[in-house]
Image 1 (cartoon, rainbow, N blue to C red):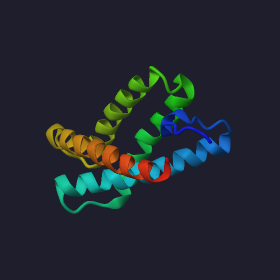
Image 2 (cartoon, rainbow, N blue to C red):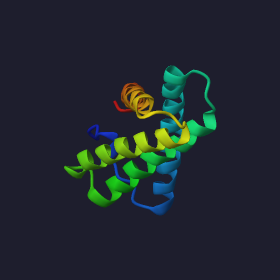
Image 3 (tube, helix red, strand yellow):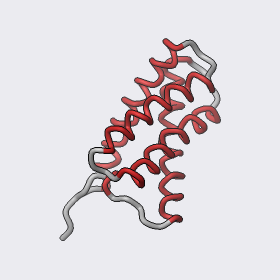
Image 4 (cartoon, one colour):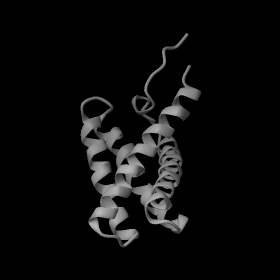
Length: 123
């Protein structure tokens, strides 16, 4: 019987596994970014959400690959949040205040939905 491990501690080892992880993470973060932007701004295009989602997905997956899942994880998450803010500000062409609100909501939705989905698949 194997013990449950956090999702980010299971680091993919092959290039196809890394690319697949980036793709799945991009879709996940893209959908959560779209939900956050709709909550703050109203009607927005889903394409912008998917482009925003690629930013934290790549930073997190590549950062965990390079720095590992230990203490470097805090740096990776902080870098992903800052990059997420910058991507939201650029793609949605909003003021800093609205971009910050979308970033906070995006982070909250991602953590909540990720926790729910993670608890469904980890015994």
